[in-house]
Image 1 (cartoon, rainbow, N blue to C red):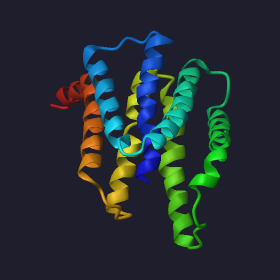
Image 2 (cartoon, rainbow, N blue to C red; image 1 turned 45 degrees about the horizontal axis):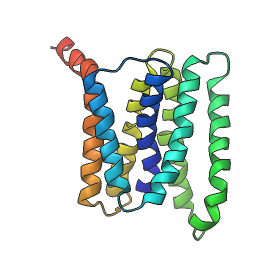
Image 3 (cartoon, rainbow, N blue to C red; image 1 turned 135 degrees about the vertical axis):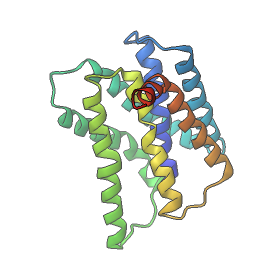
Image 4 (spheres, helix red, strand yellow; image 1 turned 90 degrees about the horizontal axis):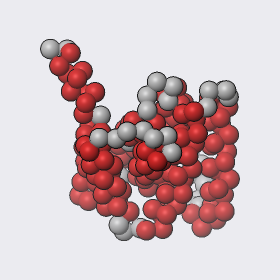
Length: 195
């Protein structure tokens, strides 16, 4: 669960950098600090397994490119495009299946939880991100994507009772701080509006 979320953590960094260079989106110094902090968090997470970071970067890059393309695309159906991207990502990962596959689970409970996670924590957020691109900058949508793996990390410890190391907790805390810093202008503006 934790390992699969690294691709989601790399994607916002790549998306923000691509949005800056390709779409000419403006970033403040605090937002660049946020990108740097996210990068530090990802490096800390992948410190023990560089190969996973390479695979995560490959998947994160494909989705970042997809977000950049979709921010200017309004002609195609968003759900159809999302399905195409997921199939493309699966085809890219297919050659790695033999070396990373394990025993096939047989319990219904496993597939039930995977279905909930796939729909509620992957497909729905990705689809909502596509709709968000019509009104929010690509770099901002990219950084908000970090919320999904943070939720997955919390679920890994709270629901699946995976051991959470101090380095992982620190990494996710840094990334969560990066999301807050990146969106600080909007967060604190909302806070003052509710007073």
